[in-house]
Image (cartoon, rainbow, N blue to C red; front, top):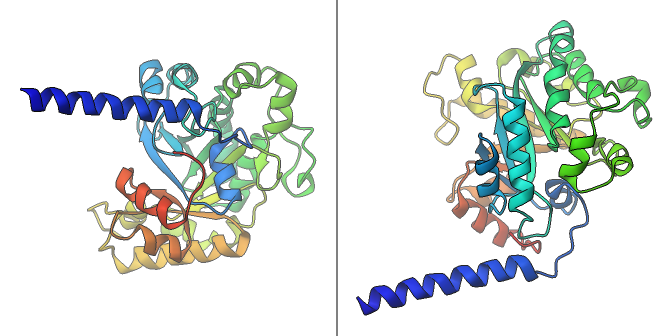
Length: 317
């Protein structure tokens, strides 16, 4: 019994020390978007998947992950729930690094199949940004023109960088008040900062594309040249589906076609200065980083701990 009490006391002390570190860390965030800050310093970022409302957000406010993928691709499309999730993150924060919230990237059931489909569905992405998230990840990015429309729809019309290639932004008045509160800035600051990075070096929004089937792979070279995209992936599970593999694997051993697709997307990411997203495990995280992966999926704390030590990360986590 004494041993159990001592062990419980030890755990309490450890938890208190961790909390104290999170509160007293002298690290000063340089940006609103924690993930952009890390990528700018050539540090890989690690994410987890989530879905839920206020309590889920509050629970994940001090997550070990750098960003949260809020997945509404196959879960109910519920922007009220997303708003409550963001409120929970703010109320439960800040992060151990001092950022108001972790980065939140939303995945939606909007598909980048062609221009008409994209035009009909950009409202979803605009609604997501209005809830204060930091980015959107586009599924089935088959058509470069659809991707251009995707980027255009998520910029304000006064953002002039890249305007000749992308067109006037389509976000409108009234989309920023709640989002500014979530980011912890005044409305004018939000309007200036809510632009796409790295096209706008001062932007705080990350847009990604999923090159996740054979049709998307055909156009990947053109798609990843669209200004305003920050990252891309080859979606190994769906890419496998595209080649008639039903297992839905994201970790080795992968079908040869899926490996080749990943290599091709990674190569195009490097050519265009984009971050490449892929799954990692504790036993391959270093190899993946050395290969060029900069957004590390898989949701395993152990992988992140190994990777962060390998890259000599300074920012607290």
